[in-house]
Image 1: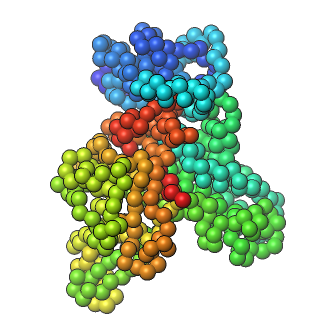
Image 2: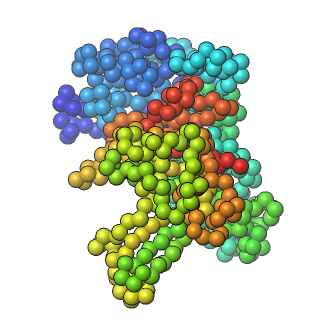
Image 3: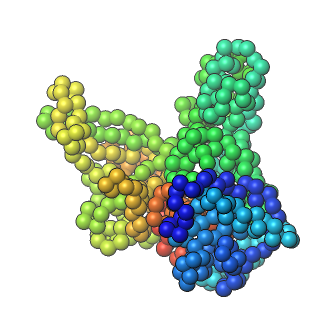
Length: 524
C-alpha cells in the first residue's frame, strides 16, 4: 500500500469479509458532507463516513485533504480500498490493522436497517415531470450486494436481467434433475460432461449454472428486497479457476464465460427433437417436450445472442476467394484512432441502404468524437494480412499474400457489442478511455450485413434496426482495478446500477457514459 506500508515481505493474505458481512444487519450510513446514503466509505484512521467517487467523491476528497487518511472500508461490502494506490486491498499487515478495523466496524453496528425494497430515488438532474412520473409508477428495482470486487459480476447480471427475452427463456426452462445413481453408459457420459461444466470432482454433485441463475433472476425481480446477495452464484462461479478469489475480473470475460457455459448446458440437457440419446439416458435427465425445443442445432442462448459471420479471404496472386462461416455471441470491436476514422459507407451496400436515424448522425464519424458506427465500419473493413499471417491458397497450393474481410451473415435478436478498451502496450495492459458516441435508438445494421448474396437480400435479411436496452461502463484506469456499473432500461426509463445502489437517470446521463459492453434489442 504505497510507501506508507510495511515492506511486501511483512504482508500476508487478508481474508475478504464481503460474504460474512453481507449477512449482518447495518445501520444507515450517510456521507458527512452531502448526506447521501449511496456508496458510503468509512475512513479507517478517523472513522468519518463519506460517499464514493461515483456519487460525489467525498471519500477521495477526504484523502486529498490529508494523505494520511488513505485507507477506507466500504460500509456495505466491507471491502478495503487504498486511495494512495487507487486500488482495492487484498493484503494486511502483520499487526492485522485492517482486520482489527473491520472487527471494530462490525462491533459498531448497533442497530439494524430494513432491507425492504424502496421506491427508486431519482437523480437530481431529472426533469420535474420525469420525477413525478417515477413517483407515480412506484418502480422498485433491486441492487446486488458487492461480495468483494464482484462489481464485474453484478453489472453483467443486471444487464442480462433486463433483457426480456433472455429472462423469460431462462425462467421457462424446466428444472433439470440428474440421476447420479444410474449405471447406464449414457448417464455416465452425461454426468462427466456436467462435472466438466461445473468444475467439480467425481465425488461431488454437479451443479448447473442455469438453475442458479434462474434463482438469482427470480430474486432480482420478485423478492421485494432493495438488494439481493448472490452468494450461491458467486460460490459456483468461484469454482472456475479463472474467477476464483476476490480479485477484480474483466466483465467481458465473465459475460463470455456465462453465455458459453449456459449454451453448453442447454445443448446438453435440452437437445433438439432429432436427438438420438438412449432411452436410459432420456429417463435420467428430465427434458422438455419436442414442441418446446429451440431450433435444431441451437440452444436458447444461441437463438437469442447467436449470429453468423462470413469470413472472406481473397488471394492477391490468383484472385481465388474462400468463404468461411463462424457463429458469434458478441462482436469485439476495435476503437479506431482519429486518423483511421472515415465517413465512407462500406463497399457492397446500395445508397438507399445507408440512411441513418436521427440518433445515428453520420457527421460524427468524420473527425472529432468517435462513433459506434466507426467501430463497426472498422470491423468489416478490408485488410491485407501481414507476412506472418500468409494465407494458404488451395488454388495456388501454397501460402500467398491475401486480403481478409468480415461480413455479418445473420444478425442475432440481441446484439452484444464489446468495445476493446484494453490493449497491451509494451507488455503493459492499458485502457483506451476515449468517449464513444452510441445510439440509444435506431442502430441500423443494414450496411454491415452481406448485401451481395441472394439469401441476405431484401426481406430474407429480416429487421436490421436495434434499440439499446443495457450497457456496462468501466470506471478507472486498468482491467484489474477500477469499478463496473450498469445502465439498464426499464419501463421506458433509464436506471444506473452501482452494486447495491439503484438510481433513476435521464438520457443525457446515459449518452455521456463511456460504454464498455452494449446490449441492443432487435426491433420486431
